[in-house]
Image 1 (cartoon, rainbow, N blue to C red):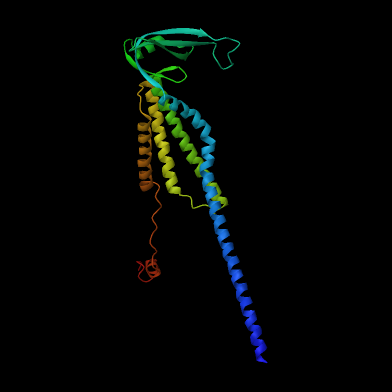
Image 2 (image 1 turned 135 degrees about the vertical axis):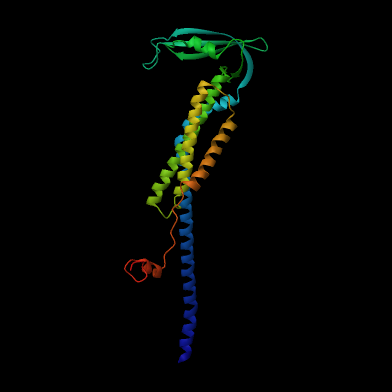
Length: 287
């Protein structure tokens, strides 16, 4: 009577073991899928935090940086200033817009290069501009040597104007970088509030240090941009970027160590010492 029962148990044992293995395989596949989908979701959100600010500011940054690339590819020619001619031109009333003045001042700078070729540089100024000729003659003296930039579109720009334009455009680009990082930080905090399991914790102290350092460096750069309009100085782009991000790195380190530091956590007081320190208890300091 026991032999059929043993045979039945022997047949049920492989079926049970195969069912257990199938369930374990399904559970493992479910865990792998869940972990993989979670990693892909985190990766997608991380890419979104980078791509969104870049997409919003890509075209404005391109418009600002386009002139910098043109200056890099320009041909530099040394020339001597001969004289300056100032003319008041009147725009066509039919072609002028509502926000455009009917008159403007055209200042023409006449140069002569080493080969004896005459070069003319045109600069437009708003009308009226009292004392413009006196200001230009005090800033640009006849017989002084200048570096002229021959752009691919056959226009000519004086090195003084190039210096002002490059400094201002680089400062605008650094401002766009600050706006992009601030946008990324705000989106990160918002997504972290809605999906806390898909993003790492927001580094509040580090983010505050970086953003504050960039804001201070940008303010200093804006001040130097204004000073550069009064006394133009041609600075290479690599020098500007190195000095700017060097200041940002130094300020970030100082702010992180000295300002945006987490408060010190007091060590836990043992319960026996807390009881003895209370007034009205034996040994509490009150008789």
